[in-house]
Image 1 (tube, rainbow over the protein chains, first blue to last red):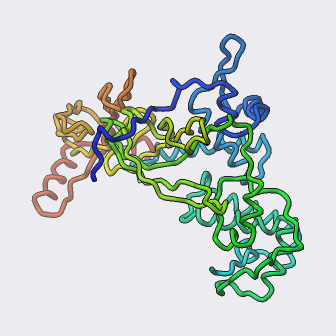
Image 2: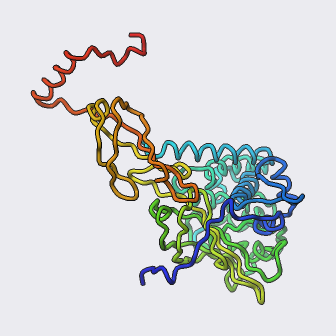
Image 3: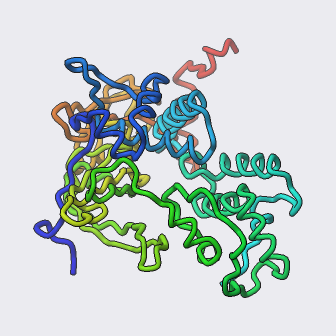
Length: 102
Length: 311
């Protein structure tokens, strides 16, 4: 059976338009809210404050999960995680720019 | 089932200290971590190393493994003796979502998975699942249905973590970018009882395209032009993801000149742009006529391409 549009699952982009509370994010990452707070304080996650509550965007889910994997698997501390996440994004950007030039 | 030599996997001696094992793990984990590594088979190697470390870092598991392993050689057929693990007490549960080898599960499966608790979740709600896929650029530009085969972790009847294949047909949302996630509501772990199913998040990376390079929402094409097309200006046929267009090259262009087609990048409320980066292709001087043409050009033009180098 070949995929046809009417039986396909509708996907939505999970990005800046997706708004998450700290409760959502901690549930989705299966970690304590305290851990999310630490990521914010270390600058791993960006946050906006709306009526004195934190709001995250969809991309924070990807970053938080990446940070948690690095922390667990490489036994990094918070500062190490923050540095690794930044460097990995820089590397990904450089690879994209290099892309067609190889 | 094959006997696995965890000491060999980690590259440590059988009498290695805990500190040496930890050091070896950290080094290998940095080398093969799938988020960091570009090594071939990084994921498989990382799992192997993680499994070895899971056993060797725990004094109880290591003692049990050493006890059991003294009569085995790597690759030898292995069968755990009945009740082999009595007398060892296992503390601490496997925490990640990794699936270990049959060998590991035969040894530690029941114990390691038993403590796998469901932490801080809504009762009854299935867990979210996450996956990564490679997507063609056209899917983002035009939307459309793509079929993805994902490996999904599941707990089987014996409480072991196994991985099953699942194929999904997904309507790819138009305008998805590399690094973004597609959310499929209700496609994660099924509900427990009366709860709701978890969601599935698919992180997208673009397949390398033979023509185009993608940076954010912008798409780049390197377009070869002849020296006279760059110098005199020309209108040339140019591929774009939406089909061929006639592109006007301004006179006096040079290698690296960037021409922009506004709004022809990845679609969005503020769509990206399509950039054409010019490359000057040099015609070969492989016959008398071409050589004469080059010689005539050299004679007619006082041109020093190295003037900026001071020579």
